[in-house]
Image (cartoon, rainbow, N blue to C red; front, side, top):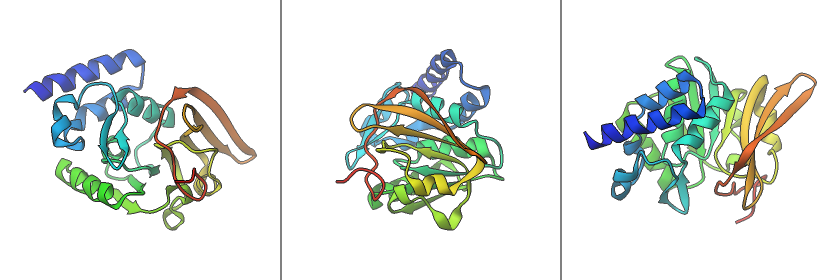
Length: 213
């Protein structure tokens, strides 16, 4: 009951951000306490990041809401996520794409990937597939994607991700080393548009087109 109350309060606080109702409904359906470590369950609905192991974090609820809102996710979309973490952000996007859509998410750490799979299974999501590897390379075997959600900070847009984004598709990606700007990328037939949507702080993207260890 306490978690239910905290969940409702979180949704009420997110309404003030002005995000789409579809995003709020999706976040209302996802039990965030399934996606945080046992010793952090009491903080599951507090609006700040939480450690999930291997030096990684689960993003604050407001950041998940903002990124999903910027991506303008539609039912049936095929989405690539870079940085699965504990699986929470993928679960919210899974709600937004519906049964006809699919989330492909790449995680660098095998242990986190295994935890995310279990969290998603327990929460009942079957339209999310998790891969272990270098997220800066994307997932060419499943491309192209309608949307790409990057949940770790890169030096710039990794070329493979841009290549794997459909024309007309959108990507959100934090760019910068220690403090970053969140960029909204739209791929057009004649090139890309990019808009800065505010300052953020994310863990670094490690990989061929990311930062070095």
